[in-house]
Figure 1 (cartoon, rainbow, N blue to C red):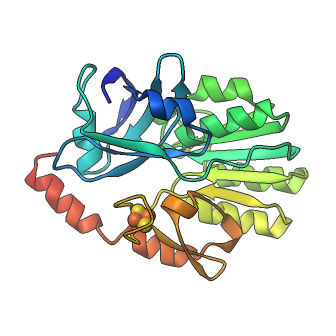
Figure 2 (figure 1 turned 90 degrees about the vertical axis):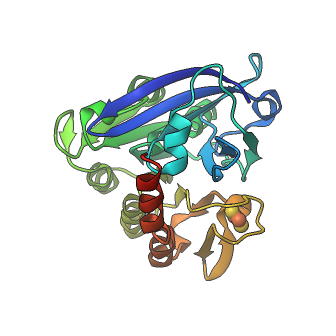
Length: 275
Ligand code: FES
């Protein structure tokens, strides 16, 4: 659980995105695209789920990318190469179903870009034609552009402020592409409103859409119920039944409400801890 390498991928406008390579040979050996780990940065820290962005079986390491948004990710950001995580469990969750679908659009916003990287790579290796749409608030927050561009047959970038490539949102490009071409699958990861919008757009074109959810998790073993999500009218747990679900079947309004439950408490704790 030792941190072998740390790199700042983005640091602008008060937002910091960091990549860690962590020694975890057992996890590296078994990790598949779409799976995640849960870590504790320190003994008193909470558990946070993070997607396994890359795994190197030879080095026995896994790569994790996170944005410092709350108490735990900020304390995680304070660790350096040579430090150790307090706890690490994984790989968790169902892997992505990798097969030959045909033409696929992968869209991601913010730190969700890190989550589509292993999935895009595996889908490309399975012979799919890949269109990638990445979105960032501003140019300095765009991550993994080179890596994802090299995997794609078509590649688009949007920035909210127009500082790089097209001004606007990933869903704007998605709407244009869906109107012009036929696609067999859309895979989306990012802020909930973006995934919800992608879902409503693709429904109109009858294109199946898979999203990878990142709801609140506590135990990540299906015991606590905090990652509950309603899918096709049934209660599912993102940690053991997901993290991927058919976007068209998710109760998005409920998910939005549940995800903001602890926002005020978290801000309060960050203030108390000077984070
Ligand atoms: S995190 Fe507790 S049930 Fe999923």
